[in-house]
Image (cartoon, rainbow, N blue to C red; front, top):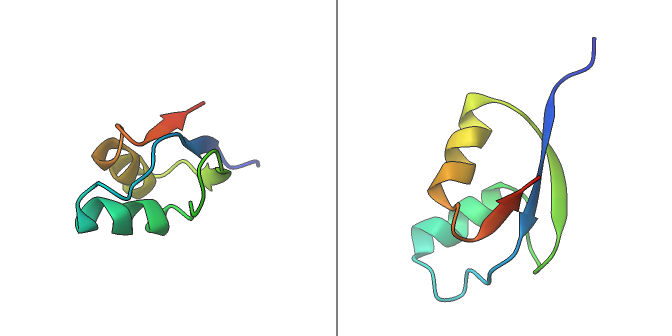
Length: 59
C-alpha cells in the first residue's frame, strides 16, 4: 500500500518572517528558495503547511 504524499515548495523567503514561521519551514525540510520536498500527508504536516501557507506552494 502506498502512502499519500504532498509536494511542498518554498516560494518566498522566510527571512522577514517570524522566528516561529522560520522554524516551521525548517521543520518541513526546506532550506532554499524553490526547493521542493515530498512529505507524507499527515495532519501534522498539513498543520505546518497551513501555518506557513504564505511562504510555500503545495502541488
